[in-house]
Length: 68
Image 1 (spheres, rainbow, N blue to C red):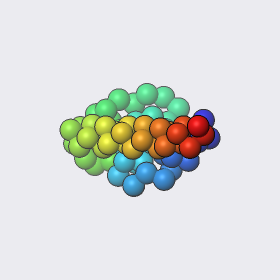
Image 2 (tube, rainbow, N blue to C red; image 1 turned 90 degrees about the vertical axis):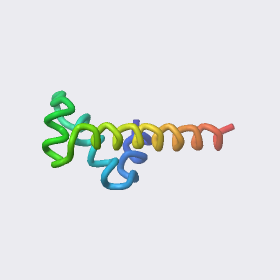
Image 3 (cartoon, one colour; image 1 turned 60 degrees about the vertical axis):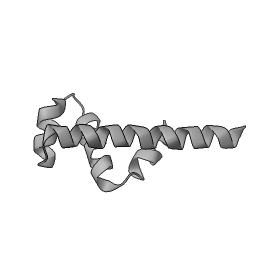
């Protein structure tokens, strides 16, 4: 889990902010409220989250391969 937290912290700010806005709170706030908090539209938030997911996956794969 600490590795995932590190990866998220190292994401570029728009991607990191999107992840924290949607998933970083104590409760689920939904896409619309998260987008409103970031003052972006939902479509942009969705694109940021998809890009963050891809970046996280790439980092996790890189770490896994280095262990082999």
